Length: 587
Image (cartoon, rainbow, N blue to C red; front, side):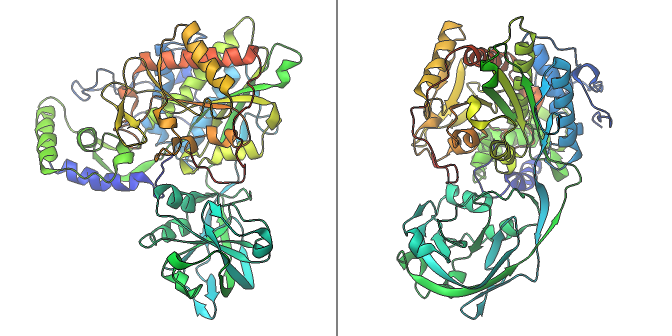
C-alpha cells in the first residue's frame, strides 16, 4: 500500500536503525532466465538460531496446484519476496524479474495474454525526469530560485510568457468560475494536512476549466517538498490531466501576490509570470510494466464482461547500507506499532530500556543479521501471490465462471498508483465492461498483536483470528457490499469484517491509497481486502517468515469465492455517488 506521506518512509529507517542498533552490537540469486514456481532458487543452509520466528528464513519451493493452500502461498511468497529481487522497486532488475515470473506462471496456468501486442505486459510511460537547472520563473520582474522557492510537477516542458495569475481558492476547493480562469494560471492554497501535501508531491492536481495551468501555494514550513517534487527520480510520464503543475513556497508567494496567502480572496489578481522549464527525460534501465492475464468466461455473451482481480507487484527497494534486522524488528514493535505510519515516534527512555533488554536476551541465542532489503512480503507480496492462487484455482475448475476474469498485477503502486492509473486510462478491455474490481493489498498479517489501523477518532484497531478489513465495498454499489457479506456467511468463511478504516473523512485516507481507487473513480464497484497495518509496514522486517499463511489462505479462498459469485451472478448495480475521474480523492 502506498504511503500517505510525501517523502519515502524508508528514508527514516537508517536513522532508526542507528539508534536501535547502538543498543546491541549471501542470499540466493535468481538467474537471468524466467523463474517459475517449479524451478525456484534452492534455499541456503540457515544456522540454528538465526531467526526467532517459527518459520524459516528460506523455504523449499514445491509445485503448486489448483487448490488454494498454505504450501502454495509459501512457495510463491518466498519467491516474490526473496532477497534476490532487491525489494522490487520499479525500474530495477528485481521488479523486472518479478514480472517475468508472474507472466510465466500465468502462461503455465493457461491464462491468455491480455496486455499489449499479444503479451502479458503493459508497459508504462516511465522515465527519469530532470528539471533543467537553468529553468526560470519570473513573477512581476522578480526571479524565483529553483528548488528553494519553486518546483515543477510536470511530465512535459512548461513555457508561459507574461501570463496572469489569479487566486482560485484551496486545493480541492476551486471557487472561481471558468470565465475568471480562462487563459490564466490559477493559484491554489495548499491546506496544512498530510493528504494535501501528499497530493502536491504525487498528484493529480486537476486544472480548472479554461486555465492555462495551476500554481500551488505551500503552507508555511512545507518548503521541503520542493526538492522532493524536483528530484531526478522515476516519474510517470503519461500525459494525463492533473500531471502538470507548479509548486511555490509560502515565502515565494509574496512575489506573486501583494497580500499574504492566508488573506487572499478568491479572484484576487496576482503578478504576470514568465516561466521556462524544459525537462530532460531518460528511460529506466528496466521497463516498468503491469502484468495482465485473462481467464476467458464460459458464457458466449457474458465472457465479454470482466471481473477484475488485482494486486501490486512492486515494493520500495533497498537502503544503501545494511542495519541490524532484529534491532529494527524490536524497535518498531515497541515504538512504532504502525511501522511507517508511526514514523514520528522516536521512543522514550523507558521504551529503549525495554528494547535493550529484549535484544540482550535475543543475542544469547541468535547472531546479528545485517539487512538492507525491503522485501515487501506483506506489502504487497501477499496480495500478489493471493491473486496468483485465485487465478490458478479458477483456471482449474471444470466449469469456468460465465464472465471472464481479468487479473492485473499493477506496477508502481508505491510511487502513487502508477500502474492502476495507467491501466484504467489505457484499459486492454472496454472499461465499462468491468463489472467490479477486487483489490488485494497486504493480506498476510492481522493477528491480535498487530495494530491494523485506527478508528476515525484515532483509537487503535487490532486484528484477531477472524480479522479482515474491507474498504469501499458499499461506496459505489450496495449490492457488491451485500454480496461480499453473503459469500462470507454462505460459504462459511466466518470472517469478522472491520469497516472502521472505511469511515468517511478518516484521516488515514485508505480508500485513496491503493489500486482499487483508480477503478472506483471511473464508476467501477470495488472492494479492497486487507488485514491492515503492522509494525513491519514499509520496513526492512516485512519478510516471508513473519506471514500468517493459514490466515492468508482463508482470505484468498474468500476472495476466490467472491470472484466466482461475481463471475456467475447478476452485475452489481451502481447506486453510490460517482466521483470525478479527473478530480482529487477524499475519503
